[in-house]
Amino acid sequence: MSSSAVVWDPAVLAYNLGEDHPFNPVRLDLTVRLATALGVLDDVPLLVPEPVAEEDLFRAHTAEYLAAVKQAPMVGWDVGHGLGPPDNPVFTGMHEASSLVVGSTLLGARCIAEGRADRAVNIAGGLHHARRDAASGFCVYNDCAVAISWLLDHGFDRIAYVDTDVHHGDGVQAAFYDDPRVLTVSLHQHPFTLFPGTGYSAEIGEGQAQGSAVNLPLPPATGDSGWLRAFHAVVPSLLAEFRPQVLVTQCGVDSHDEDPLADLALSVDGHREIYRTLREWADTHAEGRWLAVGGGGYQLIRVVPRSWTHLLATVLDRDVAPETALPRDWADHVRSLAPNAELPVRMTDGAGAAGPGFARWGDGLDDPVDVAVRDTRRAVFPLHGLDPDDPRD
Ligand SMILES: [Zn+2]
Image: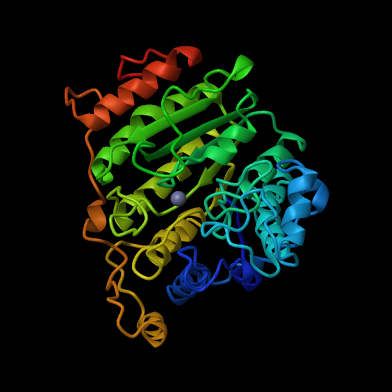
């Protein structure tokens, strides 16, 4: 039985990019309310984070950028560093709120490094686009990069980062592109068709770290079965070879069919299956250590609360059955906020107890997902001593 830490403080809701911005913190509040209403968090002490220390922010960001983030709300002119455009609007308390998000993920990492927990989860984290000297894609500070860097300085030298957000995990990839101690793997919608326009299979890391960046771009409209087929065809073989001491996962849920910002077609059942698989791989390949963070997800009512409740439940070994009905109290609360919203009824999108099925790669099918899988395997498998064309690898 694993011990698990859940990091949560409503103060992270202050990371608020504005009323009309898609990255609305209500999704976190609705998730915690749903998980609570279903009993997932019963008797679970919620760990309250501190803002990250500035010296730890320097692990992933420049001093000039930090100064710009702090000053931006006070000055009326363009401070540069990606701050100000509609994606990354300047807001009051931006440095403080962003520091708390990073502190939350770092607290999870600390619990794992100190042996207080095997698993930790921070649904407010996953700000994977933030760059060393710039905000990007709704992300100010890169909690994933800071936490991985911190782990590298506190007893670990092999960390795998798996990013299942619909967007490429470009900021985390860039932070460790030449560092062979960190394997970054990102599955995402094809960069031709979606922000940030990177994440091609040919991006494999540089120098000694060739092979430690892995990208699997998937065609728009890929659904659960294709996504899971690709996931299994690429990730477990690499984890088995790399033997990470910690698995860090960015669990964005903007890959859902109903997400307004992207065009993959996963379901809540697909998300649940992803988390159960990540848990299994953490146990099998990463000595049981699993740090899970949130990420994107812009269907605020119908998708994020259910998918991340499944994430919390999976981390805690309290899996919620797909057919579970949504509690009336939760639905009443949502209706009080959004009287016209069409609410989901159960914790499934229809796959039910069997979960979404998928066919294994290498069974003779050859569709666009298989082409993507082959390109990625051929780009990186040989660098890990694996045969890209042998489905047993
Ligand atoms: Zn995203």
